[in-house]
Amino acid sequence: MENNRHYDVIIVGAGASGLMCAREAGQRGRRVLVIDHADKAGKKILISGGGRCNFTNSEVSAAHYLSGNQHFCKSALAQFDQHKFIAMMKAYKIKFHERNLGRQFCDDSAKQIVAMLREECEKNNVEFKLNTKVLEVSHAEFFSLKTNDGVFTSESLVIATGGLSYPEIGASGFGYKIARQFNLAVTETVPALVPFVFDNEDLARYKTLSGISCEAMVRCGKVSFEEEILFTHRGLSGPAILQISSYWKPGQAIHIHLLPQFNWTEFLRIKRIENPKQELKTVLSEKLAKRLVTCFIDAEKIKNIPMSRMNDKEIFDLVDFLTDFVMTPHDTEGYNKAEITLGGVDTNELSSKTLESRKISGLYFIGEVVDVTGQLGGYNLQWAWSSGVAAGRAV
Image (cartoon, rainbow, N blue to C red):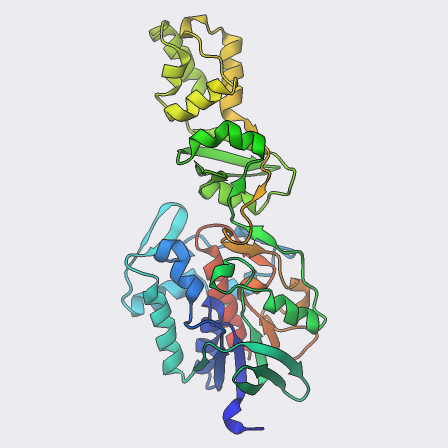
């Protein structure tokens, strides 16, 4: 064994969780190597939040995560919470701001966060092998990784390879493959935080609406989110749609309440008194985009008549439609447009405190590759930071 190729810890994946794990392990004096097939570290961080990186949320709790074990994420989140990451940002004088619903964004660029993490790793003597593909992993006395740059060995191996979302920047199922190789269960994986696509019939009906957005409450089953929706040339997107997509199953309907904070019944009754000659189309266009109102009329969802001719039942029926507009998506846009992967390495296989495999000593899985999926709003990056720290303290 070549001593210069043997490490205390090898981390496969130079993304958010891998960099954080490397920094933490390096601080403890561990000899750490990070391997990634990409040409630069933190590629997914760089495109997060439109390049501004929604790096955490002020309201992090287990309630914002989906997992086979809802309690699994609690230990890691408690070890390194959002306040600790924010303290790192402040120490590096990276300016940031809070947007709606507690979402924290860089004022300038996600590049600052990657630079911070790289500097933290360099301070702690972490080594990097980028543009390096892992071809084979084996385990006897040590973990042995065969790569296109030779063989590297380690006492501990951390898999931080992410999920299947964003294949154009190199996402793959490598982490799941390694889990299965060592007989660890992997739950079903599907695209999450992803836009919906219409079937051909709905596409023909709503194709004129591309680019229109509206505040709405979107419900699927018992779960609902209130935020903006956006009509696209293929279907529906926007924050409320991305959120609900993580809970949606093929064939399920979604229910859309347009302008949920607005009293439609009172508005229509007042208009009937004050503007009896005005057509319904004109009245609704005061609150909704004209193209949306026209589309509803053309699709015969709404009858365009003067307000004076609307009786109470017709108002109630219209309000029912506007507050419970039902659609059944044909599918999602898939992993190409998904922000995250739902599912992953089964949490029953891992220690919640350290993320170490219960079957294979020294083998760890962190970040998106694990069956812990956050809602939209910085929760997934916080899970990456937290799970990376938890493993970094144990390797």
